[in-house]
Image 1 (tube, rainbow, N blue to C red):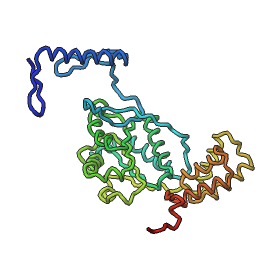
Image 2: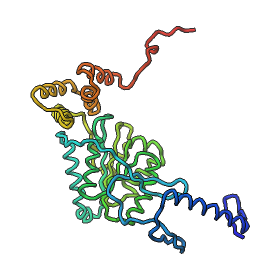
Image 3: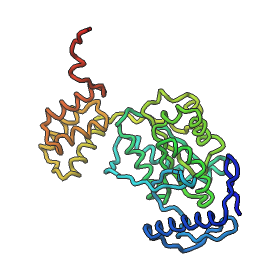
Image 4: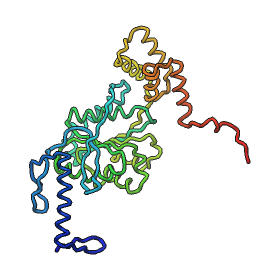
Length: 332
């Protein structure tokens, strides 16, 4: 006989029921292994028993991951995240190079942090209008740690990823204590709205859950929604930077290279077109600059139609109404 204990008391199974249960799970395992074609190469020691398992790796392949948890068995894992990388330009806006140089200096200054008895970490908050191009800077930061330092990137973009991250990091650090890691926290202002998540973020930034060898980059489109407890203490965010709208020089650089990469010859006539586009995109965010160029050269719209469409979208500020909304309504 065997007792199985649950929250509402013990359930007693006889030997036949136990055998049937084991046969059921064995049949399920056989079907899964046949379907997945697993190959077992080593043993896991668990509770004194030796469990055949698939191959392991001593280090995570350099790349992007999202912290996650298996809701069936509670296993915490790093889920590889496929990132479609657009063409990255080294924009002449100063901020890109300033940030990349600062971060590279951080990665190379570990000994100095140790001498001062500090945790080897750095926290950055980037804010801007939506669609203004800060994602391109973040992607360059990630590419730097991956390509130059064989590092890892963990992306936190929802509650589950945030709640799973500390435990996953504890385990990663047990396996790889010196690996350089970038942690991206997207939509920071959304995550701090919940008290439990806000407390967890504070622990990650400067409390009990500080992790060594980690650069954390948080982003927000709504800095006014972030409580001052995050922004007035310099150890929580060492750097707080606004990603401003592209100026004339940056817009010209971006449009010229965008067209050149698409196979267009930048001759005198195209140069005149580009200069005109640059003037007409004054005040545009990067998203709108990109959209108006693609509306002409991919969508086939005339210059006038393309700019009319984009300007209408900008003026609407996302508040679209049906025709009936603008009509006088009769009362009954």
